[in-house]
Structure formats: C-alpha cells, structure tokens
Image (cartoon, rainbow, N blue to C red):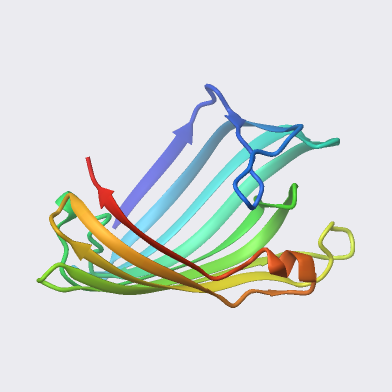
Length: 207
C-alpha cells in the first residue's frame, strides 16, 4: 500500500481562464490559495491496483461581473491493470493496459464562464504489441450538476469515444493517429453544437 500527501503552498495562484474554443476569457480572473490533497494506492497483484484520491483548495476572483469566493474539491477512485508506456518508468511497457477512474467534483468545471459541480468517469484500454503498435480506445463521460438556479438549467452531458493507433518508433518517439466520436447529450442546441467529432495525427517526442 502506498499513501501520498500533498500540500501546495501559494506562490502565484493566478489562473488563466479559457473558453471551450481555447480562447482566453476576458474580464475574468481566479486566484488560488494553498491547496492540499492525499492519495492511496493498493496493489492487489503486481499488475492490478486500486486507487483513491482527494484534492481541495480555496479560490477567489471574478468571472465577468460575478464575484467568486469558493472552495474547489475533487474526490476520485480508480483501478488499473498493467502499465501504459506513456506513464511507465523509462516508458517500458507491454501487453494489455486497462485504466478506469470516476470522480465527483465541486466548482471544478468551467463551462460558459461559470463554475459547476460535476460527476465524471473515464475508461481506457490499450494493447502494446512488441512490434511497437498500440491500438487503444478511451471512453469519457462528464455530467454537470445543473438545476433551476444555474445558468445551464437543462441536461449537459459531454461524452465521447477516442479511437487511436500509436506507433512506438522508439521509447522517445511515438507517431499517432486518433479519432474522436462525439456522443454528447445536451438540451441546449447551441451548447450541443459546440461538441463535434475530430481527427488528429502527429508525433510525440519525449525529452
């Protein structure tokens, strides 16, 4: 069993806020105070591990004309089987990898210039062949806690699948092709239209 404790003392807590399209939010600023967290990892076998973690911090600032003085918190659990090359020591990994996590958060999701509580989960499966090819699939789910008092009052659920194929030319150089398939479910047609399918190709070099 491994237990980790974390305390992040405030130095420069200013956070750059961005819209869904990646552009910087105007007239908005948040400043985080010191934060703390803890995690627990329990190894059932050499390959199968259970995980749990929590992180909490206070922040203040403004989103547009709205003043904010709140607490940010996220609690998560997870499980993993095997090792995935991206996170393994010296990026040495082979065979099957399966990772799952679920979380509950408070004031952690910034959507449309407002902070929301949310529930999320993600599942990733990959197989690392000896010839360097790594096919994978990622399923992602995020549901905002909306009600009659939040700016978004209807259902807002972002969910998608990512299909990918990586080629590990070496431990330091990886070529990839990935496709995002959108299955989001939102009552607001304008918000739903912001979610879309996508495709990317590229090369990662690890320094």
